[in-house]
Image (cartoon, rainbow, N blue to C red; front, side, top):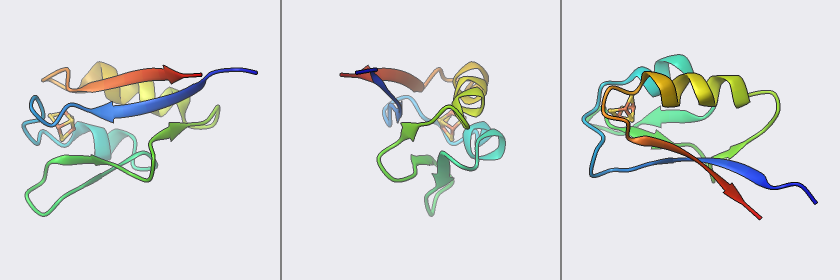
Length: 70
Ligand code: F3S
């Protein structure tokens, strides 16, 4: 069985730059104060893996992580 990829936001690092939900609206939303939030359980599919990696690369605070779950 293949691993499941998930995105996570480290809320201690997120400063609300908003690149994540601009670049990967299928994976992230924003809360009332503009901080990024993972939508649903954050599962990354082959369809949005590119978006996920884009968001990881573009968060100025490096607050987004891609994790593999077995
Ligand atoms: Fe926060 Fe980074 Fe998104 S700072 S709002 S996780 S781009």
